[in-house]
Image 1 (cartoon, rainbow, N blue to C red):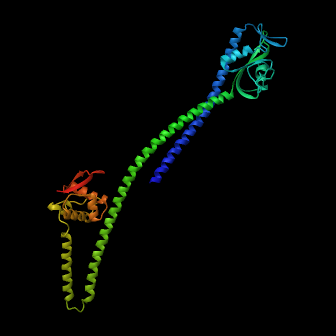
Image 2 (tube, rainbow, N blue to C red):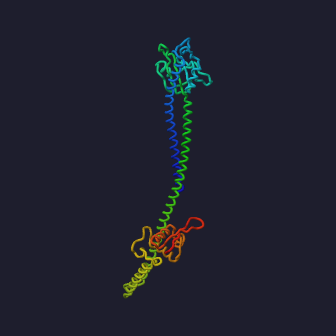
Image 3 (tube, rainbow, N blue to C red):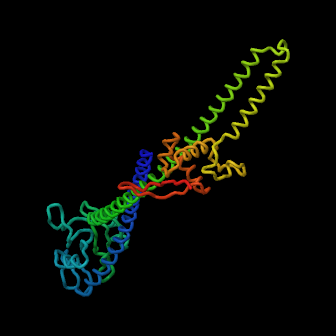
Length: 373
């Protein structure tokens, strides 16, 4: 039973751990999808915001002069102040393209330098420069993946002469997701430990109670089976002795040559058997202290699970003792289990033959004493 309790506890804790891990994994996928959607939304919003800021701060149209990109009268090519200011406001990387080449950017290479003059990826150039559409999605920016938004830059006559870009690095996205998942995992682990401890104490309490009930019930069943088996064996032995005695008498005297003596002996045997049966019926223990009770008067049968032989044995012991006794004393006196003896004593108490009191000792739990009335 102890092993079963541990197995159930391990099964419960294992289920909680699997549930927690599954929850974190599903949450991770969900957060990843939601983070991509949120990054796309932010990139689009930042792209529009930066366009409005540039138009307000640098009025005029986009143009190319001497191979340089201008916004109104302000040169944008190699103007890091513009892109740095916008990057500070949005938290994104910001780049301005002349054609498909970067002329002002906050994106830096592995050496820490701004990647001026590098080209945009081919799929982005096709969408923005050729088709004149806004591109929103994942793009390769100098060997790294970014959640990006690109918009075409048009001259006064409507020609596309460049692009404006904002992007959010996937490294920062992944760091944000990892931090969120770690926080969630710590929370789930704490909850799992608390639930596991609660389940451990509840299961231990329930199993201890169930184990005690099962042991008591098993002890009662074994005791009843043992008592009934002993009674049956004693009865069979007694009837076997009688049969053996009768057979011996019949073999010693042949009825064909005995001149009627066997008939007289047979009558004597019948009379002896009748007396024996009468004595057996009437020699049972008298009611305890003269009180007539149902199992002696024959008014009704004993309750289910009780038998007359065991009851007679306990009643006889109580008559001989004739003093307050405990279940343990009666159990030792009649050589029966305490569970069985307690059931019979409680039955006698219900019938008004005994009464019980709790006797408190110096140590331990109180002892139930049964007192004859």
